[in-house]
Length: 200
Image 1 (cartoon, rainbow, N blue to C red):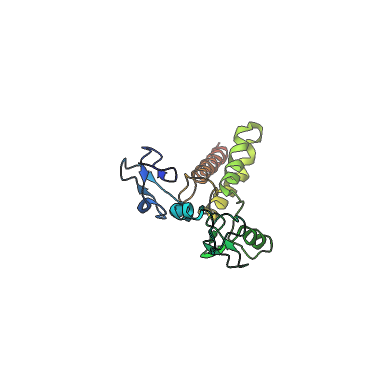
Image 2: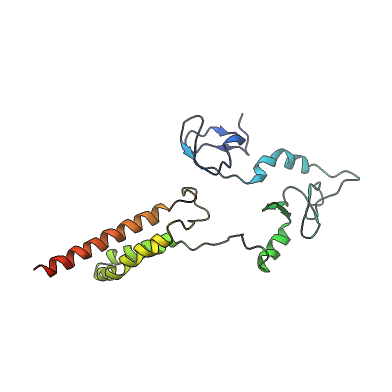
């Protein structure tokens, strides 16, 4: 019987086991063969431990610094506070409390925590797409299309959205591929126009 914490296939909705999670590659669902890329927070595997930590603290047991009624399960590597599994943030192999995670980001000690990301694929698509949609500006593609060919190639494998589930790591996003091909088409179109003018 499926429980609330299980991950389900997006197509057949069948619960998936731990062996299907965090494979760092695309893999077929063992039931319907739908290709999936599943990344689950490590806390998902600790659901049973979390349930145990939610039990009231008895005499002689350490309690969480932030939740005095919950049993401590970890110690913050930065400040030494006792943490329940709800407050424990496993970050790059270190156990941090929410306060240390936030202060570390503000002080620049934590550089790998991304809150926003430049979407190079959207920039490329706007550069080649907007002049076409706003027809009087179509002449701008004479400059934007070659630029996007170079820009798109240099940012070809740049990471896409932080929250998107449809993008494959290490591969260009669909928007970048579309923008690059549109830029190539526009560049070829301008070459044809100039050649037609030159030979008439």
